[in-house]
Amino acid sequence: MSELSQHPRVARALEQLAIHVRVSDQALAPTGDALAQLIAAFPDLVPFGAADYVDAWAVLDWDHRLPSEQLILRVFGIYDPSRGDTFARARATIDEQIEKDNLFPEFDLPDYGELVADEVYLATYRPQTGTIGDVVFSSNWRRQVLETQLEAAREALESHPPYQAALETRADASLGAAMLVGWVPPALAQCERWCIEFWLLMRFDGSTGEANVFVVDPDDGTVTREYIAEVQAS
Image 1: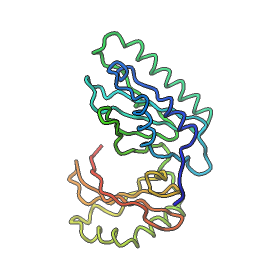
Image 2 (image 1 turned 90 degrees about the vertical axis):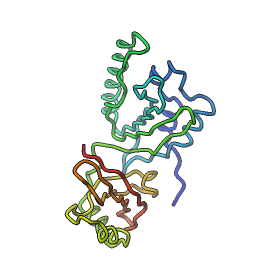
Image 3 (image 1 turned 45 degrees about the horizontal axis):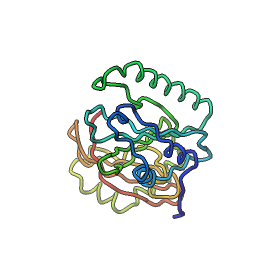
Image 4 (image 1 turned 135 degrees about the vertical axis):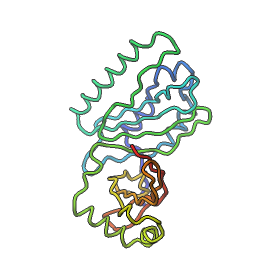
């Protein structure tokens, strides 16, 4: 696997990390070595396919608690200038609402969780230790997988011995085959390329359950990552 390096626009966004006012009020914003530690811990981002980041923005968001214990790091990647303009307007609207509502320190304020971009990354941040939790990726397009790529990934998964063993050992076969989650960026796929993620439900009671997660590289047919995830009904 080749060494990745942080995209310059993402690196600049992290270096110029925006801070929610409620985080600033509590003097929890990382500076100096703490900011450098956060930047070093955040994975290198690679845009999907032939796309490139025309802009990126990062914010350390409030957890709506006073005192805060676990802040929210949000990183947004934007591919297209027109979507960048839309993103900037949406961000400005939230900024204005925060400024308008920021009358007393104990007042609740909006956060930046409703912002939409081509790539959105989310991680918890503990200011007491300066550490970030697992990074989660989301996008509106991640399930758009070409049929040929999906077929190659499923074929590789179905021939993977741990997947076969999981199918055989689970108690309820009616939970079905592995479900497509969608594209996963290289840093989270533990691969140099974007890969495809599947979840195989192992148990589910209608509310909560557990799934075996398999991440597959459709280009070379390898399973690059496996782990267990909790499942909750939305």
